[in-house]
Length: 481
Image 1 (tube, rainbow, N blue to C red):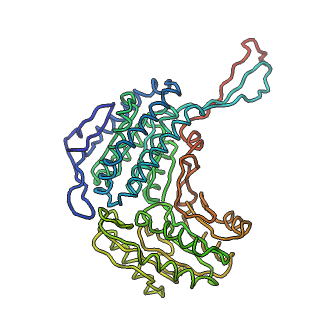
Image 2 (cartoon, rainbow, N blue to C red):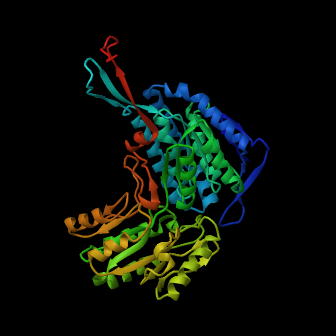
Image 3 (cartoon, helix red, strand yellow):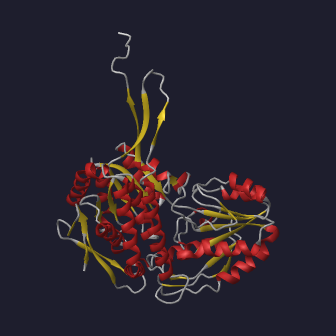
């Protein structure tokens, strides 16, 4: 069955009837066949969203809240469909896919709760007899571009808050998981969202640059949100800027987990293992750099290697912790990073094995700044251990990156840990917890090459509304001429 576009509440093929196939990264079989949208389809989606906007913007908060909550209920009821699609298209494990459904429903419900918090304020005016107010108003058509690595969470997050704020949306799916993303749209349509409020575009990978450019440049589109790589984020940010359209960009990361000399070693090891290898390290917040004080490094590394080397990896349909990388070709990059690091003095402490897109948990000890993996985002299960001497060097190394999304600090001295956390340049930092964490009500986003803007909770109101100044004045007020 073909994954269809959804434009104006109607399912349809691409205007030229072209399809494309997504291949299962583990089996090599066809995981999904999807409509490959044309530029004509892009125009239709933008116009449909714009046509639906005035009525949706005037829809009361209670109705918007009820529809969003109903969509969350439907999503949870479709859990098995989501899990099957996500395993086939991305190689994710069942538990990770199931967690995606749970947290995505949470994001939708958090957005539902926002509908009565989109307020304003009365501001004292210098003009006598004047009532001055600030009011948050919806922007219009919001374009959402979601990735494949946490596709249900990030696809739902991309559209839920904009809808809660009274905007209409177009979700452009990842080329790697169109069926998974289409299932999200089905939840909203089945919940009863009016025609044109939620629209869906999927495209052939070769057409992605033209489709994305056309979507951003469509006159009807007034806001863009994108989650994905920093390289693509730069392109999207540039096109949006050239068209004077605001963009929320949540991009790559090189998350440091800093282990200070007084840390609870077992607690830090557990957090590092989880943060480094959840979803094969294919999360923007994944622990990429374990920065450990040299005074405890030998004990820490011994314990971390012992745990990592026992993590089961293989076909995500089996009882494993590490499933597949998104494509078999990514394994080649993992081997290149390992070879480069070892050739420059790093030790392959564990792992380094693969079978196609399947790759074992891998740790490189003694990583230094001249190695590729010190700077490059691996976005896979190959991770660095960097030994440092003292807190000052730990902070310097943590900040020696163009990225700044998530970070973590382990210490049993809360003041010491807080000083370190405050010195690390990142949008998110956890003390005595893993770098990988998400709660729908929290402000989520980064600094530097990790992007700008924030998803989550009330931060979404600032992103997806325009703040207007409105006054009620005395018509007979005095004018100077």
